[in-house]
Image 1: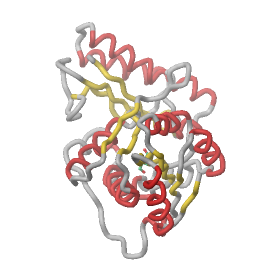
Image 2: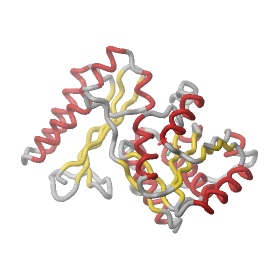
Image 3: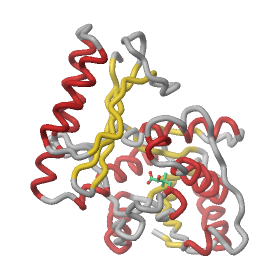
Length: 280
Ligand code: PAF
């Protein structure tokens, strides 16, 4: 796997890949890779594409009091994982390459980005939309793969790519989970053993809420039972637990078509998010 760190080398490497491949797929990441990222590379390869992965811890999507400095960085292990997964090219720019002196553009996607994480983390989705637009513009892939674990992010990126006529197919890849059900996340490394055990309440609370709602139970009651379960397990702060329309992400108070349960909550210093399809 070739590793490139400046735009000129990236353009040449992608042009070379294009000669040999029917399609180019991109998997944007912030590194600290795990099996969830490998599933994105697998999804891209299964479509017959050569895979370009980016690793860039994007400062503009972190709030002032968030974990930018603590975010795990371990490029050597990431490279080994990507080589084993069959990625063709790693794009690993630094901050000055992505945001040179004078950089002044920000992309804001209204609607789907406004509630939930958009409300809890002001500026987060403008940071995501801007960096993803840059990464897609730099590589110009045919398809790009993103995890459903960041369900709202996926919706924001779909809107961005459609609105800017980028002509790139966005593939959502199902959340990968540990054997006990916790969604894989680079931030799980922050959890102490006790917090890791307690964190299981998140997928379990969502699973119970889904069952109750699919059986015709009252949505508000199912959501408050889930919130109570998280509080009892030791979550300190619940940003939201909501049932939303799967496409618009607007809240719904009864199940009518495809919906998604979304949740974000903090345990200790770690903020976890998760989601489940409901009514498929
Ligand atoms: O999901 C992530 O890892 C990041 O938000 C992304 C899409 C790579 C943009 O920085």
